[in-house]
Length: 257
Image (tube, rainbow, N blue to C red):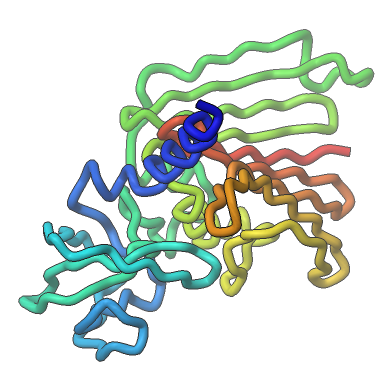
């Protein structure tokens, strides 16, 4: 029974990791320079075409065993697709369940939500006293639900604010890639940064970052990332968390003194 209990979280984690790929067959390419369509499921296989950023593609049903691959720290697998009358393989780490951000116009997460969905109902606002109370007692919380199930919670207090986003059907890796494409999060994830798979401290410019990766380790070959947490200070203290809650990706980002 004890072994069964240990396996349940692993099975659940793997289920959510590949949930979007089992529930839907249509996805959008999210590689800025285009996604390589290869002749065979191997990184050294011949590139037979380049699928432009933002293209909607359909995965082909196949009995082939999925081959896994790690790119930029993201663990994914090869998917068989047809594009431009050519059949080949792409790495699913660069596929989104929704269109990727329009690079010319999307600068913040709220712009991305406006791109892919619309608000559902009026924004809910709750508050205590006034947000500019000099003694720091005031606060305001705004909540907005969207038609695709996404949510945005914005909290504002005295010398502190935070934003929490709920994105259905995104994995941790897809969330990382999404944030890397949105300038609002450039201090967290630069264009060439890899997916954080282990805890570490590093310095970028004059700023020290502390990355904590919470892992559930089952044995030498099996582990599951539960949460990614980043802290750094640039005048204000910034705090970031990203984790899965059932089939929702939760992104929390705050700044305060």
